[in-house]
Amino acid sequence: MKRHMMHPYTAFRPGARHHEEEQEQPRPEDAFAGDGASQEHDAANLADAADAVQDVVEPSAEAENAPEPQAEKNEAVARCKAEMEELRLRTAAEMENFKKRLTREHQEQMRFAAEKVLGDLLPSLDNLDLALQYGSQHEACKDMLQGVAMTRKLLLDALDKNGLKALGEVGDEFNPEVHEAVGFEPNPDLAPGSVTRVMQRGYKLNDRLLRAAKVMINQ
Image (cartoon, rainbow, N blue to C red; front, side):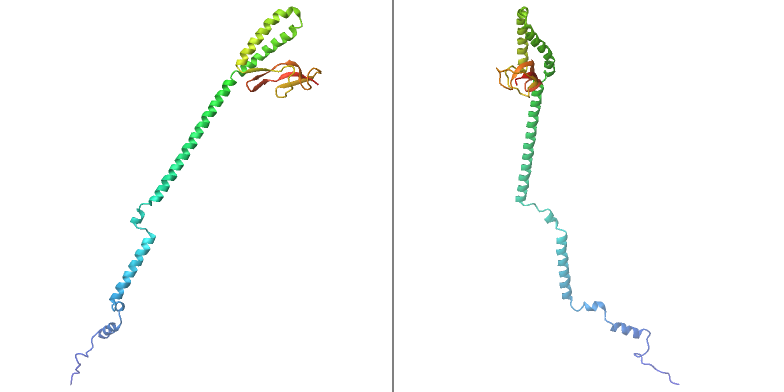
């Protein structure tokens, strides 16, 4: 009985067929193995593009730290100086206005500080006027009236130095700002609308009216 002999090269080897199929299938890396120079060129282009995008998105440290142009610096300095000068002038003007206001208020207080005291003296002046008005009708009171008239004059002179002025004289044109009409009285010797008689004298302290004069008006 003969043994069946097999050629050593054709003998069955487990996995041999599978091994040959694997060798016949193309590998992915073989697609890039053909042209190495092209791969390096493409990689270089991609790297350059990435660097360009990075420079646009994130400026380099040198660009951030680069000094500003001299013209912009000079313009900023000039603008700052102009603003400081404007602020200085505005502050100086406000201080000057404040000092003027204080001075004006102080002067007003000094001018009218004695207003209440002088106002309280008006009834005394009215009594002196009445004494002169009715005492002149009696001959026996003539000597006494001289003393009353002198006292009234001295008092008015002292008050005049403090800014008090008497208002209301016969013959004055009627002025509603300083006169108070209490009636009408015809007098052919005076112009129409003028004061014919002073019932109560008025007074003014500097530019402020303390009391209007009560007068009769020619009709």
